[in-house]
Length: 343
Image 1 (cartoon, one colour):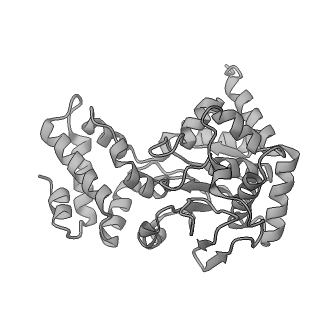
Image 2: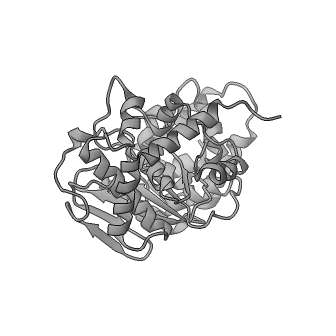
């Protein structure tokens, strides 16, 4: 067995060189079906990481060993942000995607990352596919989309290629059984050219680990959000906490938005996923949905540095939703996807 696995199973610290050796081994293996022993080791390693997060030094070394193998995204776009959650919380419609479109309609550059569903009805990538909105295929494509629309939905190129190789070794097993661990670490693994990232954390048991890892995330300031409802978005009817690089902010229920409403108001529509989502981007949405989207968009506005006052940022987000600007932006993105490519 590889030392990375034996050291992890012994609950000792796996250092950076050992993780590098693990990924080197994956890169050097021949093409074609993996040996049963290689598949078993990969599955055992992921199962152990999924069952219990290792110590901070092991996690930091793992994070570095993966992100250092990703292509450099180049300098961050000034004042740009990302919003992404760790998943695993209560079932809600795609609030972070709605907040991203709302913030972009407010003039804030957004490069949004996401994943497919592991526990939810539909992850952000699943939703975007159904909407007909294209993921970017490279960092250059991301920059083009950002210049054209003020928002870009980043594709798989932002994640370490080593994860793709790991998936190939596991085949015919899938990564889905290890989704909780991958969702927890995933927001930190993406190399996106933004200045700040708002990451919602559903399970506070992972919060300390993520706060420890935050300084190891290169190129962007990491904001970590959680609340007493166990959601990975800010909620107007819950007590929310934001850990920024410089301080901790508390947004009690009702601080900006009305504290009325429940998680039931934010549930996905099982029979009309895209229609329900697009309605949420307009004045016709349920009030709880409107206030929740505006609250998260306001946090992005503050993280971007575009706004310095929460009340102003929140009101601006409400105005954008009342005007239907986020839905209009989504419509333009869909049209761009359908337009024929230029020679």
